Length: 134
Image (cartoon, rainbow, N blue to C red; front, side, top):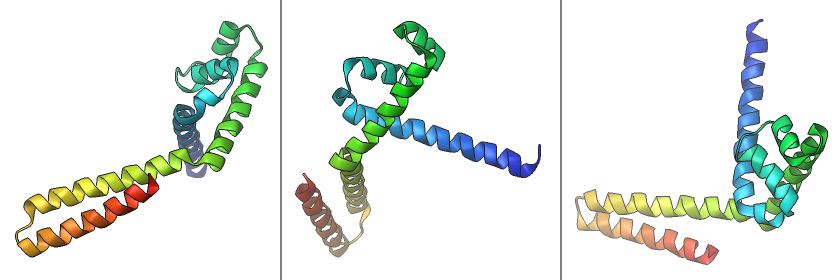
């Protein structure tokens, strides 16, 4: 196997893992919007890391049936995110909260009153943006 082939496999594996992580996050946000049967099958695949064959045996359906449900649910969850944007909004709010935490820590170590005031002003600005998003 040459280096390009090995690199392609690593990239494909990384992409597959990123896809699983993304779908598990979307499932956390929108899983309750799926039908009960689909939710159980998709959850078994994404959250419990069961194989298609294991899920098919447990659910009493074909492996292809499980595959089709997982594909449809993946499309549906991504569509919910496109329409509702809850994950994107959550990530944005989380980043701003982290920025506030970092600025607060900088205030603790600031040497001058002027630095503390400037940092407090930044916290006010980030907080205003955060409140607007809520």
